[in-house]
Length: 568
Image (cartoon, rainbow, N blue to C red; front, side, top):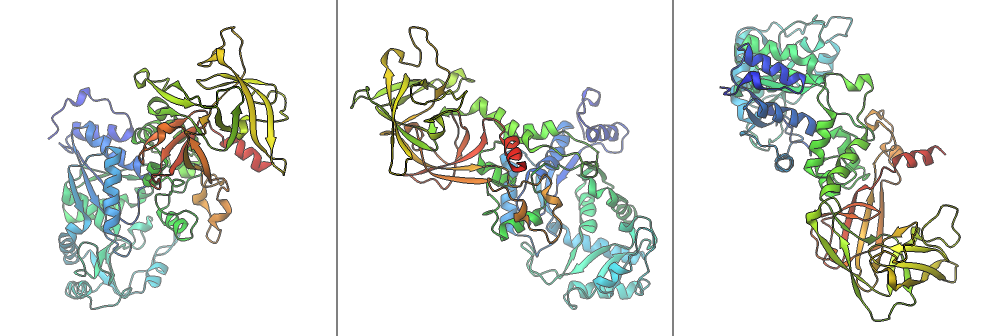
């Protein structure tokens, strides 16, 4: 029973408004929703939207959320995926009242199928899958009734039991609901309820040789569990009449199905089938590849639950079919959410990704100072840290040019810049190798500018970061970007190669980077802002003698620049 003041509630979307109306008019006196993941892969960001709709709806009305695994296709499902899905959901902060499985109800579902046979609303069909499909008709032509449609109740019951016991080969028979082969909604043209599969199930083993189709199992499972509101994506809207037909003719608890538009995001693939193909073809390493928007990939890349929840909130809940309307959520919005979150929480560190040696000629040979650096300017409580400074430093290669263009304000011969938290320096000379490559830059420093400020008030136009060469921690840095150059890669036609649309800059590995010594000993999952570079996360591949960092996101969106370069 709902024990809250319904008039005091403030629904934030059309689903919550519908649930509130159901409670007020007495259709239901409690709220129970369910998450129905199929354990055949890992969750991606598209699942998050659906899961949060279920979770937030139940939470608003003081109801319950069930986690029910739709394990009706044993050929693809594994316990590994069950465990991973639970871990990912918990990482997001979603809590459920009860964990169930479609397989928990196989016996009862079978009994309900027998009930439909006995009242003349289900039959065993011997047609081949090709014949069933061919005889279903088209949107403009009615289907053709099966020659086995009018079998006796006794024969249907006998055949179904023999199907269950493994007496027939796969594909030889199915159980179908008897509805209307001329129905304008093709879903209602005698849909299949059970198919034969001689495949071991991850929970029931070899007990069953028939497995329910989704349309037969999920609505009945909802009813069996007393789910009040079955919330699903918009492609199931056409299936709702069948959902209601089964429950009506069985005379059982009638759950209500409500549909919403699913998440579609630019430059992202949401199909689990296609994601699996990317892995099988070696385009990405695994389900946790940081270029994927699986929750495992996002977590490894350094995304936080807070950023993903914020992203979900910003995208909202809609009934609009955003696939057909052409409306897509820009990938940049997800990046903006993680930037906003990490800007508030990530400690600042200095790291040089592409090092160039810088020697301060007039700095004492054996002197080491500790410069005071701010940990997070957005969080005063984060305090400061000490960073060692010495005669020989590393700076970024991009921060020096021997022959700079106009408006290049960083380091070049004769120019003065500020070293972050340290001193003003002026470039005096460069050292090149035999091929003419610059391998070393020489400078002088002004000892009166300790801390980065000149007592005479003079200003410089650029501040660059650095690390002390003798104290630097070696690191490998993996720079990740969007996996695809095609805005809607899920639209890739059959026969097209996904590799054609893979962004060549989706992964750049820098094997020789250096970080300030305060990063030594950091653990996988820890997140930092590398000043002037971006946000980074320690990868599980890190070893004691060599850290590995994944770039979560750059400090600002560089994608527009990349697209322009591609056009040119």
